[in-house]
Amino acid sequence: MIDEANGVELRRIVVGYLDTNCWVVRPLGGREALIVDPGDEPRRIAAAVSDLDVTGIVITHAHADHVLAVAALAGEFGVPIVGHPDEARVWAAELDYLAQHGHLDAGTATPDFVASGNLPRPSPDLRLWDGQLDHYSSRLSVGPLTVELLHTPGHTPGSLCLSLPGHLLSGDTLFPGGPGLTGPQWPLSDFTAIIASVQRLLELPPDTVVHPGHGSDTTVAAERPHLDAWRARGW
Ligand SMILES: [Zn+2]
Ligand SMILES: [Zn+2]
Image 1 (cartoon, protein in one colour):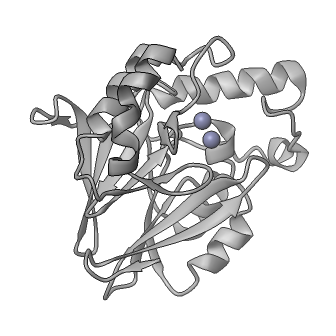
Image 2 (cartoon, protein in one colour; image 1 turned 180 degrees about the horizontal axis):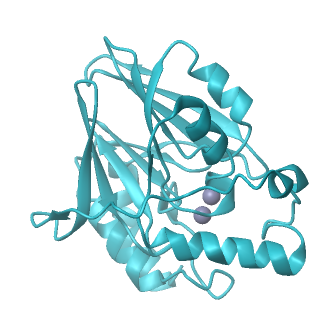
Image 3 (cartoon, helix red, strand yellow; image 1 turned 45 degrees about the vertical axis):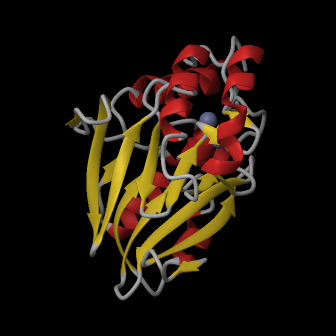
């Protein structure tokens, strides 16, 4: 989609065994672009950015369905990988699961990936403090566009959301109908943390379009009235 008012184009490529939304963020009027959550199918993602100059790859979190194409694309474009350092242990847990069960935790084996040895490498250096928001955040420049990375723990400890004018890429933190998955099946998740993160996200302008890591878009205005109900139900 092209949003002339906010000067940004977002391209969505649905990839991999869990239909993950991989996003391409491009400021209008230039060729620079970020790839967000290249979950799999690097050839399709590369084709979708063949007219652009990729300047970086951001992962919202290190669950396998969001990162399986990171290494291939980072190698192809020679760009940095940005992720929260707390995701290192999420990725380690994914690999532990793989080692114990022979497949990733969604039940779909990816033998080519395992054989390739091209393991994603979440960056260890992302840690800037934004006192105004009272949580970790950082800013990335993509051409003339400023993208703010918000640390929104809960689904995983180092989950990030990307805030840009008029839009939020919410990873697996906020979906239409509620927060992302937490609970005993996801040992590094934390419901109390995710509901606090979601509360912060819902303080963004009401017309902000929310683009989650799977499925359809929503808006802050559509979700905000339900926050108390989500907190009460506990998931
Ligand atoms: Zn996830
Ligand atoms: Zn996911």
